[in-house]
Image (cartoon, rainbow, N blue to C red; front, top):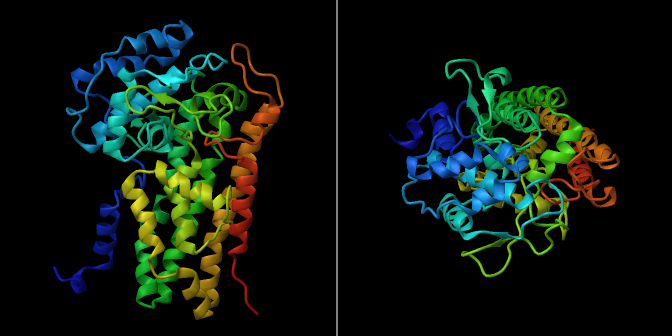
Length: 407
């Protein structure tokens, strides 16, 4: 079919398909698998029993007994994502174990070799990232039921009861709620390219509405996740070995590299949704060493390659912000500013979440059985290893500066 005969809807569908963006769940992995071939059953057995194995003090013993498996039989993207998720969970549990000072600095070769092999195939780092624990870690209890929180569960769990279930599933539902914004992006780019302000205004209004919905879902975090359990238990298992004083040299992947490697833990900065909208709307974050822009650029390496490529494609798309400025159309400016305000509002709420789940608990005594670092070291550091409060304030402030006004 000649390009000119392709409908706008078909053009959008093809773009989304090319970059592995699902019509229903956006950047999340659609219909994640739950079972690996029998050869890899030992991985699944350990990954599904982490809390019990950690509590009994047998986790590391069981991991060290695992056979060294190759990954050739893991064919297909969803099967590889499930295996990567399982190995990511096992790795975090092996390194941090009970969440105290008994930390392992070496990942044994029977785990390190297949994990790194699989990571290379997927283009993902060998650490549990947002792409694993949020985007690929879910299922419907009733496959034919609605995609609401009450009908959903996670595939693997850490200690801490339902804390990780609430944290990961609310994060996933935020992704899904915001996915119409991502589906609207090809329409936005097409409208700018074809100089169609009405189509652009409509698409921007759709983006703003989905951001409002995403914020309403985000508010549910407080209903499902206990701050003390998150900070003193779950946060430890999500922590990486970059910018972490407990593993200053990083982690040695035995049989893969001769020197330790540093990787950041899972972080909302690894979500493709908000970076996509920043690029689309022409929001420029502070640059320079240790800046927000540098951190966000680094976090792209933790995204699936197709999603990284989508961000790159947006950077060469027709500039939306300049088009709105040149048009000097009040309705268009209002629609653009509603999108920016939607991002500002989400980022302000994210600041309040970090205050609830990191800053305040860091000043309190830890719960029994789990030690944590001194508040001075942890108060402002997120699981991605960054100074999270200052980072979020910077990102929120630069987003606010993108609001348009003219006489």
